[in-house]
Amino acid sequence: MSKLPHIGTSIFTVMSKMAIDYKAINLAQGFPNFPVDERLTGIVSGIATENVHQYAPMSGHTALLDKIKQLTFSSYSRNVNPTTEILVTAGATEGIFATIQALVYRNEEVIILDPSYDCYETPIILCNAKPIRIALKDDFTPDWETIGNAINHTTKLIIINNPHNPSGRVWTEYDYNQLEKLLDSYPNLLVLSDEVYEHITFEQKHLSIHHRPKLWDRSISVSSFGKTFHITGWKIGYLIAPEPLMNEIKKVHQFLVFSVNSIAQTALAEYLNVVDVPALSSFYQQKRDYFRALIKDTKFTLLPCEGTYFQTVSYNNISTENDIDFTKRLVTDYGVATIPISAFNFNGKDTNCIRFCFAKDDATLESAAEKLMKL
Ligand code: PMP
Ligand code: GLN
Image (cartoon, rainbow, N blue to C red; front, side, top):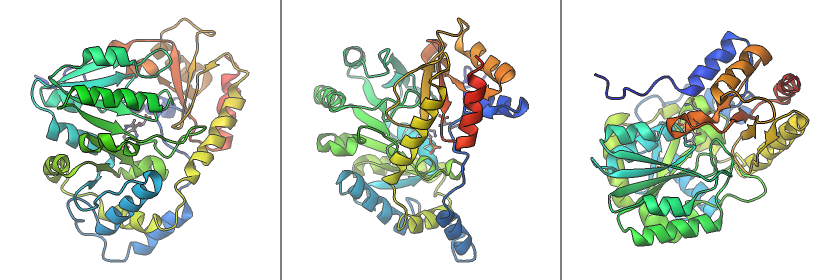
């Protein structure tokens, strides 16, 4: 008997395969198609002949831990201890898995806000704990009344994701105030803050959990170099957590991967000396604006995009099909692969919305828009 009978192949794998099979433009799975910064590829080739090929320390290469400490300070004015409060992980995915395995006990509840990214639920189930999926409001902002009603003394963790995949919405000070109130009422409640798109926000600068000292003792934040440096295939990210929680997470990490790819760690430590991380937001803001302009005359209704490299749209004016059938037809008949939002919802709740990834070169976005105009 399967431990995970309801888990199939992820929608990202399914749509990327369809894109290949039908030679469609892939605006589905979230990855950039433009070249990686030459300074980074140069560093990688330069270090290949050096002594960088053996195990890195369990919690991370010392130089990289120091750079992450500096980045956290320059981004959020927060001082973290690189030895005790940072863990380099095999992507955000491993960080999320290790956190949940380490901190959540049998029968405890974990709040997930839908639409939600697909890697949250499985580690909860594997702990014999209960995922409690709460819908965001129709505009994809948190519904604090419903969240408050769902929390009780067996709730161990609330997972938040800001900027939000798939909607591109971001949190406001109001949302953090509400979260702080909840934590005041429930002293055992912890927060897992998935901020993998932290450096991709537009009109409003990213409000991180790191801006809220009151939350530091009770939160674990998750970051991904894959998103920040256009290197999703490297699978490298990190967690920041207070020492007592981090000690528990490290116990799982130690036996899940022991340590993370040594070459990637050495290269990133060096690259962080030269790269301008805050410039990423304006880079993607131009892409967002360009893509929105390209598809503004289609029949899609564009929803707000405040961060991430995803644009969500409603196709209510085009079809009454469910979003899975609609996205399949977009590939087979129009040559563009996208992601149906129902894949992020409990029981596949469908709101006739789909997600485009605009982390693509201009030519790709232009050809996709040309095809979408035909709808
Ligand atoms: N969280 C969110 C919201 C994501 O979109 C992704 C996908 N990249 C991840 C976590 C996983 O990131 P990584 O590839 O670094 O494991
Ligand atoms: N995070 C990526 C997305 O949302 C997918 C990564 C994956 O395929 N696991 O598209």
